[in-house]
Image 1 (cartoon, rainbow, N blue to C red):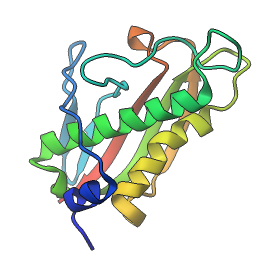
Image 2 (image 1 turned 120 degrees about the vertical axis):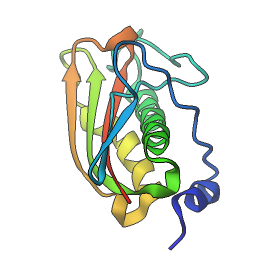
Image 3 (image 1 turned 30 degrees about the vertical axis):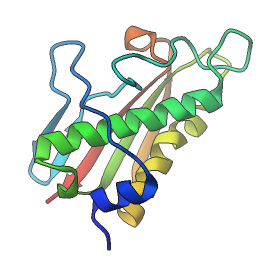
Length: 156
């Protein structure tokens, strides 16, 4: 079995820098053999790639785009968790993912959007990346982000 860092290299994934908090919290906190991340927005190089609500009409964020933002949020969570425990190779798996999708009331595809996060975690961690999950539609998220993801990892 390859290490997490080896698997990231195989996948061609460079973890982003840990996103600084936008309020009064820390990006991740370890307790026992778990590390909980704060809600991670899809920041890329310090900026959100899009803002607004997810839906199917013109002027809304497309579900496929939102899924890629959920993927980025999950990568930001991996980076935050790794920093909290002293390195990515200390992470051993994923226990729980909670995903929030800022969406219009008629949009019901939140699970498909949060698959963007779940799928990349499974690619990185293999069977240890299989997790329990919630995908929740909400009216608005911080900074008008279309998605937010928080993850509970196991570590050794």
